Length: 250
Image 1 (tube, rainbow, N blue to C red):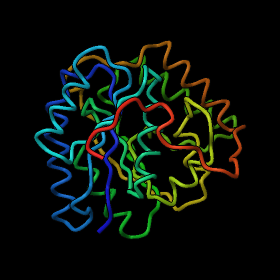
Image 2 (image 1 turned 90 degrees about the vertical axis):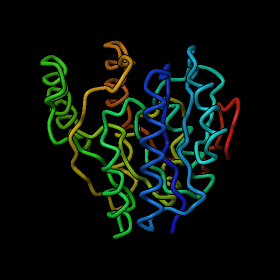
Image 3 (image 1 turned 180 degrees about the horizontal axis):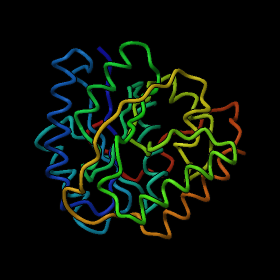
């Protein structure tokens, strides 16, 4: 069995976190029962400078279940930086990482499918949406246009894949050679040189709270997509915990 870290970036998610904690705890139980995850596996919540009770909720969860770990950033750094910080923590602990957003729109059960493909030899397993029925008309069509434009520019983005993915320690080692904040992770994973597979899942409505991705943030993410193709790996891995203020449960 391998150590698993389910990495969950969080920004003002106090409304949904109790349900997220429950579902991911159940998922960790299943991973252990199925022989994929070792008992020292964790759900790692990364608090990205929240101004509500997100961090307090994470600490309360850790007091009741030591597998609920937390990493608190020094300030709001943005989703991709928060996610990268969590992934580098998983790498530091030599754990298989599974990244998933806190809002429960991604299917938690698909994590078991990812673990199965990893056990069969895949280093990276990406969750791919089966449809965009839960999107608004505007978001659905702008997303399609975005992928088409990125393909014209030679990008190897996986269609309808965001940041719901499994990465093993070897893939995380390669990712660690890319330095800087606010990395466009989905634009880098296909360039790491490791076997990458996909699992299909149905995306749900947000369980609670509101989306943190404003139009401005979506446009910024798109711009990062265009520039990510120019990034080159360095010879020295980045240091973990670059922006970490506090750690619990690790």
